[in-house]
Image (cartoon, rainbow, N blue to C red):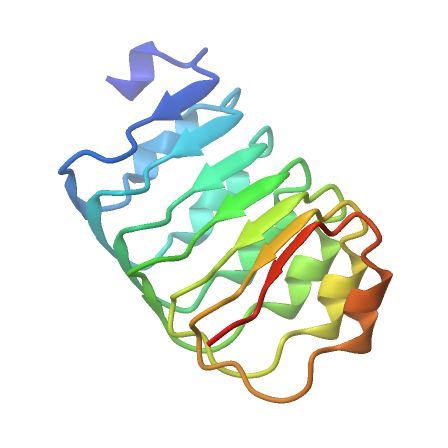
Length: 160
């Protein structure tokens, strides 16, 4: 199916009953700007190959059962403005330091995802960020002072 639909810009399958792993064929959709696969029963690791979706502005993988580390390769999605990866996903490790290079990023939600380690100081580079949700994780350490420079931040949730 994907081979015949290369001009798709929005692919939204939110809140269905899809199961299995994330489809690799999606990377053929080079014009894709909005990918929402949240609210399903998808499992497994997030493929590094998703970093090839260079036009992507919105990525919603929340509310599934993903495992593994959050791939640092997602930091190569330089047009990405909104990233939703929280709720029911069971990642291990922390937030990739490389996420600080997503300078056009406005919304980051990785709440309820079993993340550990410290909040990276590099998130202070996300000057366009207006929403940061990291609640209900196992994060440790101090809240980075660099976050105080996020002048557009309107919603911050670090609660446990």
